[in-house]
Image (tube, rainbow, N blue to C red; front, side, top):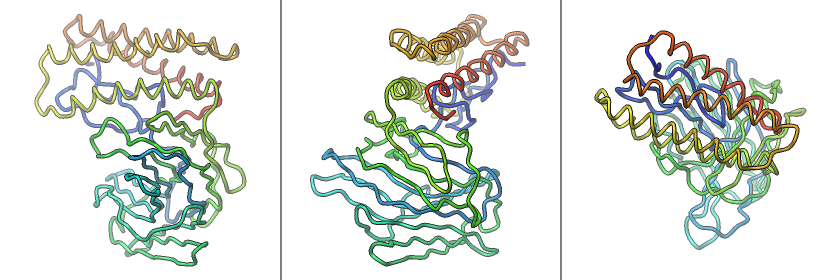
Length: 358
């Protein structure tokens, strides 16, 4: 067993879900902890997805900042070939003028680039749906306020089995390889209603939710799914503090991962040691931040457990570097055990603060 096994776990303060990040080419003996896509907030459904739909009111951008971007959409994903489709609304302001709101759709073949459909008005009520047929996907969006609709038919992945549906608010990145999303605007509260999967209201436990950490300090936490709806109000108090700490930590890890992803050759011992040192600095910095902050008395014990498990992971990286990343079955087992412990403590801490696992 390798001293450190590539891709053994997602080691992140934001999530324990195995969300793939960039591949660490040539780093089979040192995994950089993969970070999640924290620029998404809402709910996901896990199971065969033939159709998905929802309604929402276009969120209005409330601040005057330029260069801000957000989007509200429904989507579906496969598990085998990374097929993905989405349809929804973009909310953005890139110039000194008014904010722009536009219906769009996209898929994996388009490299997730938004395909414009039509401008919409702020506070318009939108209904969106996606349905898979034997020969194509039918994507439809209706502006119920302005009384228009648009249908898109695409043969992309028409025979692919889709296993995940999504109702999400997004802070989009400027490019696929960016370690940082675009600044997220201050908006009215996003609320999805008439949420359906395969023409029925799904069961969505809070474990299926994820909080949005928007670049610029906006943090949105989904409410519990009730009847057919949920909202994404701003995080408050200790929950917001934790999300801010976790976002900084995850950004540090993602920068390391992005840097290593550019390498297509096996890394030298020196490069691996530098990468391990960067990971150690990221984890140690996260610990330092949360230790100097105040937490609710009910969550203090969980924070201390998280700190201790974080320190164990740091020790593992230091031990691996000291051993020049040579094979060691005992250290390999310890790495996996410490990863798991860290994951569990992240989950417990987030739950104590009223946050979903992701």
